Length: 275
Image (cartoon, rainbow, N blue to C red):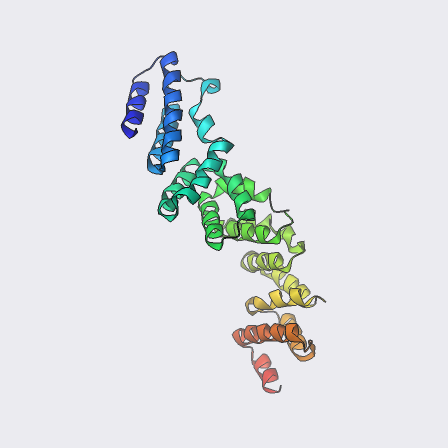
């Protein structure tokens, strides 16, 4: 079948008539489905790339409305079947599938985000996130469209993906999520702010630590070691001194002690010695 694909491209690049080209396209679509069914993603990627190269030729006879190969390979149906193949073929095909996904690009982005939201398997989540990260700009639109999702764990994972792209202009688009209801999402935004907008990060961290919700204080305390603000340090010490004595309060104070030990300020050390 790989040889059949190569022959079809050889005929087409040699100047096939429109009618023959249409027949060869249908043959390539059939071959693509065969490669998918048999798990030959290397051949599938090669077919995709050869077709892209063919379309970029000046002398091709294909008209846009008559194009069938990319219409099939980029269709939702084919994308879904490709990702379903991960379950059928197992881990041995993961790298080949990922390489194919990256070669195709944006047609996979929305489905990857949807599956990231649904899967409970941590290893699979990491795989989807790695694909989205490596897709770069091809994934941005699909990710940005889902940042208002009510599932905080999806939004948090999407923020982590975008943060790894390291585009300051893109990061600024995430700042409004500092008002997201769940503190773990706000924590990820705070991490970004400390990289790109420290003054705002300090203000937001202090606001989280002054919250009446212990969960907000807890997740803020986890990253409080990044702060250089004396007001933040004073608030940490205030919680340590006056915070609740229940189990949640104890866990919060442990986090604060960890943060303060990393900050290492002389005044903080003196305060702790006096406890």
